[in-house]
Length: 171
Image (tube, rainbow, N blue to C red; front, side, top):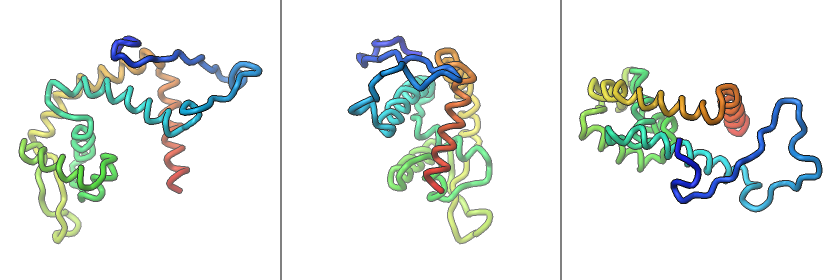
């Protein structure tokens, strides 16, 4: 992981709350300003994680967004553009441009949807699967770095909690 302050961004060490401990120091003021916004804190966390992930993908000239597309297609089923936009967390017009670039690199291809032949689906090409294989070492190293600084148990708990939050908000 990047050392604190090496990107010019100031970082604040937050106290670690242990299970069973109260929700912060007795008499501590509630966060205010941007620090009180869940949306802001989630965006800030995403930027920090994606900055390191992006570094792992740079050697193969793949963006985080393109990696998400390739990962979503790795199931081999083919995806509609709408389904792929949702899976890759991208607006449809941005996804279309990204898929076009991946098609130009012969990493993905468009074909008939296996369920409804009238529809077009996007599939992972063999070159895309090979690329994902080459990227895996960097992805694994990124994961190990996150686990090293945040801990395996805390990371697993955070991932469960974030998944629960998404499900609750989408219900």
